[in-house]
Image (cartoon, rainbow, N blue to C red; front, side, top):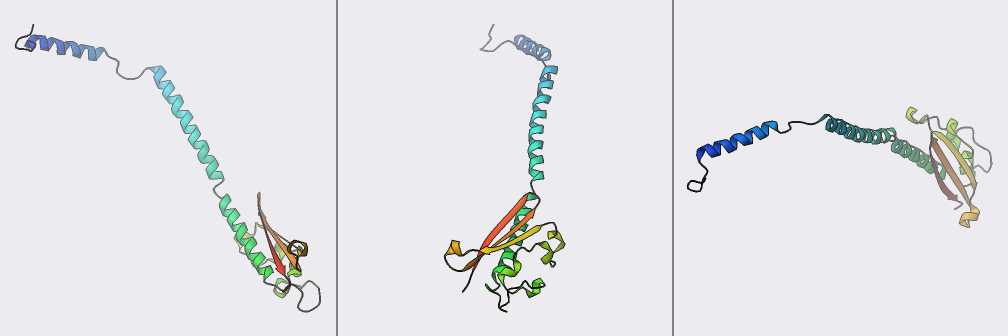
Length: 165
């Protein structure tokens, strides 16, 4: 059947024609079951991705709220700790307004009502201040100042000490 190591022309033609017929009879495309399985797998994947994106989007503002609350608490704590340990007037009375506060004890029990100069964006934050005796903790005459700032579920509490020096 070989002539000079090659198929004769008509044999070569027949074999290529036979191959062409086999290609025509071969399956072209996907079956219905394969398509349904593909749609189910892709749907499950897309559902998983969208649920992760949903959780991420819901909690994307939480760090901002936490950072604003921490900055507000730090600012208030610094303001309080810069005041005198004792009333410089010698009279232990709470001053009428924040402008007149001259010692740490003047801030005890104060809340948002005292901080009228805050920007409108911070109006939703709830501020609480507690001034207690911190002498036992430090071993010297000191006052413990705790500033708590909360907004919804986020609560930041900062504590500082003002010593009598």
